[in-house]
Image (cartoon, rainbow, N blue to C red; front, side, top):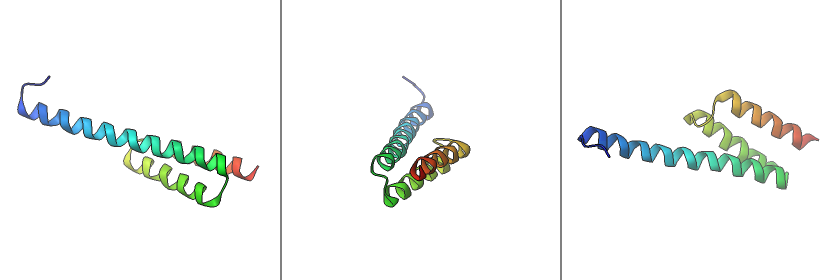
Length: 78
């Protein structure tokens, strides 16, 4: 455990960021799974939104989000 006040604060900030990133990561994974399962336009739109938000906030890279969305759309059309 950190002893210095600024280090304690940084630890609190890190815990918050980790929790937010984990939630965003789980959200886009669940959205993609739901889109693949239901194959509805609303589910695909929600998955796209979740992927874009994860890429925007830095949870995943922009190209990774684009690749996942591209593969999702390819499976939807098949």
